[in-house]
Image (cartoon, rainbow, N blue to C red; front, side, top):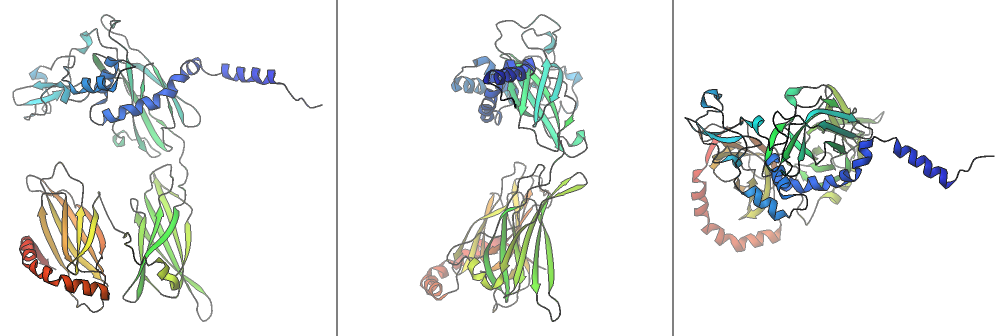
Length: 505
């Protein structure tokens, strides 16, 4: 007769399983549930201040502190513990001839603002071992890797050379920092910068769901109280998470902005970035045309490699009244091995291209972009297109060199023009390209110019399609009504473009 069991035995089994857990896991599990939200509240402060300074103010104000207490503590000048090193013991880097700080609060981590014969720079302090009001540096950092991407860290409070920390020095905050790299082999030179991943008031931490597959990780811990810190522990041994899986296939393949250029069809193919254990390296786009031959049917297959930061590709020179099979594949390079996704597919009949023509509304273009360079605004001005280029500001740049040229044009009756490059130097992080021809492809490049006149690298480039001036009867009537105003502005346009130099190729 089968055993049906009873509630009492089920409860007893659950109790036995709970007793098998490590004692530390049982004792502190409620605290771990609260820590993710606690760390999230730190994010707004760590973006502006270094993590040790934030931890000091957090310990100074206490667990139930108001935000105003922490903000006032961070805004006040703080003299860090320790002394500036002797001038004779400074390295050439420490004794650089510059003014890098005005007080200790402007220096990261433990560093103090120290003056010397040639300037004022941030230096690592001396004399911290003689202080009895700072917590000891944590020791013996151990990693216990659990299942389901969970890691349990433990460490021991270090021994002080002098007296113990005073009892009235407040709570201690433990900052857990991590650095990592992606790949099958560990290379210390490729590790990322140290970043805070956990905050604790106890000498242990659980990292659940924050570690990425296929990565190497290393940890270190600093103990901080209301008076400051002695610094970070020795880094833990590096360890590697489980092997990564192949990326998921790209999602939501869509077509848009279909148009005829020189009797050939162009259309934009877009997709959504898929989920991947390791970063996507690039995409492969395939398109094949089904051809009816005299004897056998055949397939012509084309392919293109797309950069990882782009999820759009413009298919060009497609034939009308043909059927195309479109595919997109995501590829992640892990060491020397390629992890490929399944191919997402879509069938497209070019006979029905008008269904994707985006008539009556403005569509997004497939733009080749780098480093945040993009076209923010595009409109019609006196029968010609005006486009605004926008790019991120560089702290090292004093000016920016912008170059642009026309690559191709869909106008049938327009005369052929020699390709020429125009350029302009500006101090702002945006510029309006004017007098662009409608329905033409343009390329632009922005390079940062340093204060000494040098340029940084090859700059950021973009390719975009100039549009916005509709060539219909209504538009022509509207332009005839504005022709007088446009003529009055022509002299201003000539004066504005007098600063441009055109280089004929």
